[in-house]
Length: 102
Image 1 (tube, rainbow, N blue to C red):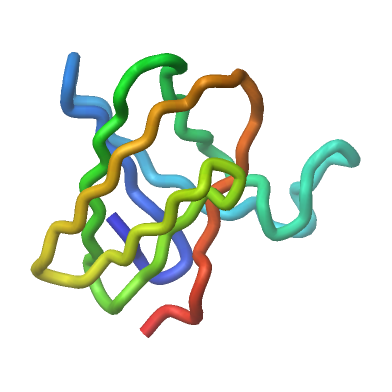
Image 2 (cartoon, helix red, strand yellow):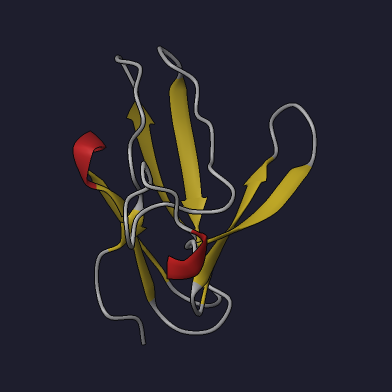
């Protein structure tokens, strides 16, 4: 769920896990963190499993992407968009907004 300045995630398959993910402020970044990419709560996705994502927004239009996985989904208030991916390699991949929201 896209919000102004953060995303909310829900895992609904096995248990009801919900959390918000905010970009880390500059004053909290470690030397190994990536500016404008690292977040306080990372989403963890399984490998070699079909992953279906439902994306929406709480306020204005948002555009969610993980460039290294080749996926981009727009979120609009009152609508559900879906996308699916299968991750076939381990790693740390960064998601981000890909357009100016609004």
